[in-house]
Length: 296
Ligand code: GDP
Image 1: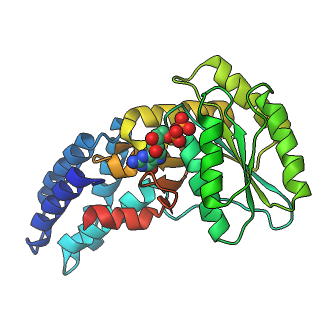
Image 2: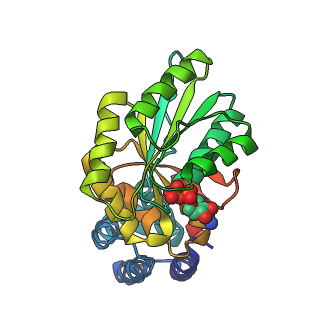
């Protein structure tokens, strides 16, 4: 379960405060030391933890909190607000044009869940009344095209593929013409990943970005890789200016470090989360709900 350890520790620490009635500054500082350790154990980025604790401590030892009738509860409220802000404050939607074709380009490393997520996202948007097209732009991973076609069949969503002999940028350009000719309104491009970030990958993605001008570039990243996920997001963002992140495999992530750090480190909002292998296992990311889940 996501945030298992963190939720347990934070709830324990904050329960102690709640039981105290009147609080001293020392009580709050002691609690914040415990919160800090819990966040570090959850694999949250060190700098993010430091800023978070400073901001919460400042707010929590303020006059209003300490003088209130229920200071313990007020501290919990401050922590809740700070956690929500850390993850981006409010839900960030994908911008879908009402007039023209919306082009969403999914990028990410091999194995991150890109192809699966392309299908999930298409299925999600279809259920909202849109007409998506899936585009098989990952021509390097042998099974990726077939995988996308199978997903498309299952979800009854058209898939545009031209095999693995054409350049991805040409496949994608053709797919846009195809989508327009069929009256489809969203194109979701599955691009090629690599095992690691390298120049070849970035050059290819930059070329697509330049020539196709997607409306949004979304990074698909595996939450289970913890701080690696944050580093990957930082590099992709630097190279491509991401519009958002889709954090996959949250169902297998117990610590939650990436979910808590990505927005603060990269300033890119997490737009969706993947919570399983099935087509329906995708959810919009709600920072406030996530914070409440952690604090119980
Ligand atoms: P790609 O190489 O990035 O296109 O990755 P794939 O889409 O092939 O996914 C790699 C593996 O991760 C597959 O076995 C997927 O079923 C699995 N996967 C993708 N998203 C999730 C998720 O949110 N949760 C879980 N548990 N598995 C996922």
